[in-house]
Image (cartoon, rainbow, N blue to C red; front, top):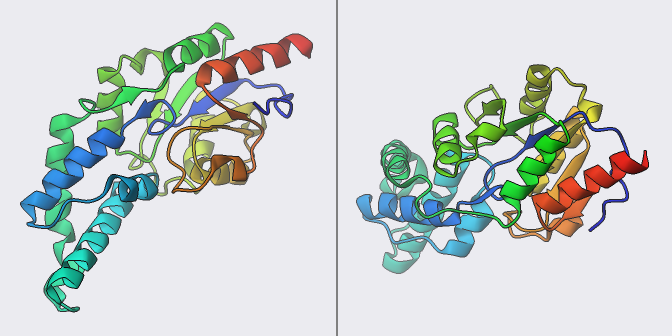
Length: 245
């Protein structure tokens, strides 16, 4: 744990969803592979999905389509004919993915250890919480309900809530506006360089979980105000910092 930097006063927390609260890789794998089967494309590897998660559904689908069409071209020497370009298949893929993800949202996902305890501990510190994710808002709300987390958050914002997604600072600045808190006193809690970049650009301190999805890169290489093994550990560090202030 590197909690020593978390010494500034914190008035509220912005908490990411996928990779921070919920391990949704199983959901992504099932929905994407059902989508690919519908498009008569080969299934995608789990490690590729993990590297592509975090920049919104559009980026994820584009990345998976490009990779699977590349694999198909290598297998049958299809070359670069227009029918194999990702753009030609994107709309069909998007509709299929939306349908399949909605059908299984949360069924193949699990809470990370310490999430419930950590969220409750943050609430016990009288810290208002808002969830900010790049997942589409409808899917985010349904997942929070499925995992019985919705009651912890006063606001939930998805990747389609604003004009731009993380790593752009706009979602965090709008979350601070909704909370009525200054960015410098609003902690961003996430699991990736996207969360850290958005926080730095918005002027928020940032704490990163050591698990989750960071595009295949070690999270300790991402500069932050603290790296933690669980939300419960983070909450304990904030409680200690407040006690010692």
